[in-house]
Length: 302
Image (cartoon, rainbow, N blue to C red; front, side, top):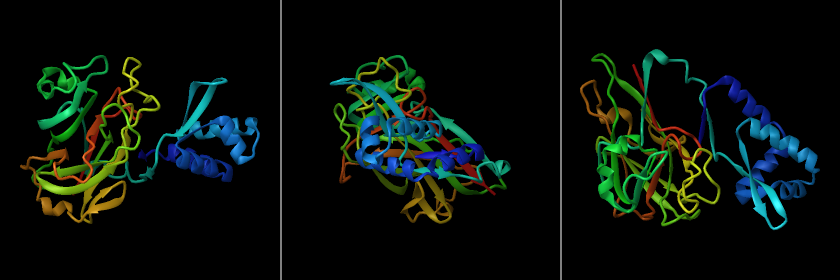
């Protein structure tokens, strides 16, 4: 999911979507995942020149990526959608006095208990050896840009900067995430569960472990048979309940957590033993995936 808070960026995206041809193009890519330019032009019954113009508008708006790949008859341009959802947040800058933002690197977990397949890596090298949970204790983990495990949990401490007279009304946590298959598998569902201060927030089912196309920020030395990118998800807990990308996943509201200025704030991401789909989890930080971000937290208070 892509979150847009800049009005100029929102206008560019809306302009790009203001065309029947481009909307049909997006529908086709959503259905087929990836197609080359010639296929799209043929399906939409437009010339290659017109297709190039439409594609440039969509690329400039950050909606579509085009990758040059080798084929049977030379190279071809493969197109795919960058995001499955877009959130326009027009109020992001409206109340900066009543919020604080923190960025947590994916390797800065405070606690963990994980099982293979697993691993941890910086932007330049694997830390230790893959499938050995002991390396999750390595001091270098603070520099990690990607972590993955087949089962278990990681916990992150979210800094509490509230003052004594302030009360949380909403917490938003965004992260790039996918399943964790042995190798890669585009259809590898995994039920990824979330807790805040041990309170259950619900779960989201990741559709797969994505690796057919290289992640935009994934380094070139990374194995093509490993996780390349994830999906950007926004987990929100407010007075109405708990939501993923605006879809309610749990009735637990922020007031029920009773967080005050003295409270610890512990966020857990897990694959429990009793999950229906035990497909692991991969967390992408800066230097990997398609979004080049760590775990971003926005705390809104009154």
